[in-house]
Image 1 (cartoon, rainbow, N blue to C red):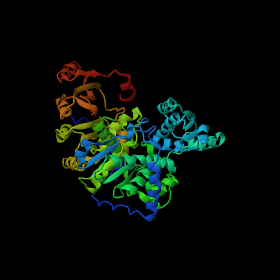
Image 2 (cartoon, rainbow, N blue to C red):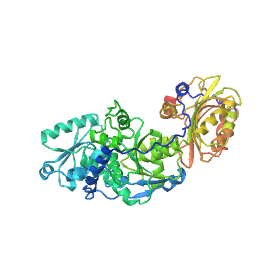
Image 3 (tube, one colour):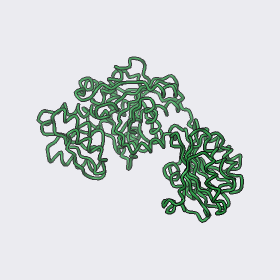
Image 4 (cartoon, rainbow, N blue to C red):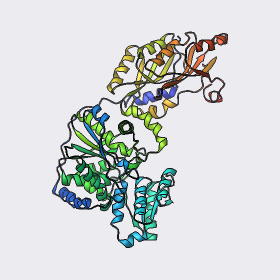
Length: 547
């Protein structure tokens, strides 16, 4: 078979060059940090919150959620992982605990006047539900960019929704203006002692539900209300249990603030984990967290996506990104410190997931689990090189294979391969190099993962006599390579796209350069492959973007 002139467009080469300096090395083991030494100030903080938490009024609206084992994940990482299922609350989040406790402690005349909050997410629903239970009017200020599904959820609970501004900050400022004008009580999402105490009931339940040893509780941090309440209760009752805060790498205001010894304001925050996307933590939550939290872990988007998948496999529930931070941190913590036999709790703090995010989560989960490696591979544009490259891949599962003809001398293939662990990608790359195929590992390159893999294509003057076909074939290891090996040796492959979607059947798009003299033989030959196919040569999309 001709080499296939496998070139993936100049974008792949650009991505490869950009990645050369950022390819990830295997994580090195490091010693676990010692437990935080609780100072007299810390003990006073914990003791002060203990009584508040024990007397918190939350169970008129909240339920005591289950603490259940993640059996598959526990077996895989060699540690016991327990999930505190706050995603099973009536509003699918822990937030109603703090909101209700705050509102239940308001004076009757303040409650009669009504409450107000600023939120685009779980706090809004918590305040709305608490207000309905307390027969109180609630005004919820939300940015105009808030998805309709969240607006509808708040209105269904009886909240008055006011849309203002493009960001949470705009909504917050407007809420303060309305509060003063309408004499309403403000219910802060995190920076309030009554809110913190309400969230602390999560820890009270954990320690009551599991009498055995707990090595650590992993808690997602946005503004810090949940971890402040959890840390205060645990350090007052069982100080030997470590409390570990979890933030995303692009929304780590609390971690930076604790390191600096003062509250830091981030200029920007990542929006994937919108439930924890806070630019500045609260004054009170900073004070409590700094005094009582033992350690912090930062996780990236891919790790969070993998954690969402892990929880789904164990529970058949779909968490929102913030709800999966604790699980992502446990996996990273176990690997980094090479720990086995521990018992850890992750608070799955929310499940208000936008459905349209699931495609992205599924795509990135394999990277988070380090089960997929992406490569840009350069091969010579000469007869036999394509077959030699395919033979080198062998029976390994191919997750993606992209190419568009462009150059007469060399070709760049964008290929994804299934791996078992991250260091395996390095071995594969070295194997390619030994066989004369220069390559760059793109597994940690955001440009490649988010954009380039979906942009392979474009027109090419070299793609003369091209016919375009869609094929389906049973998805099993080696099936793609068998398909490629069966193609006619006299017809050049000018375009190729394949992506493993996890379905029973694989789908590929192939461009074949077939001389006019061979037209009559083409369809009979394709029928011998035993794969359903559709010719797309006359498809207008092909004409607009690829032909």
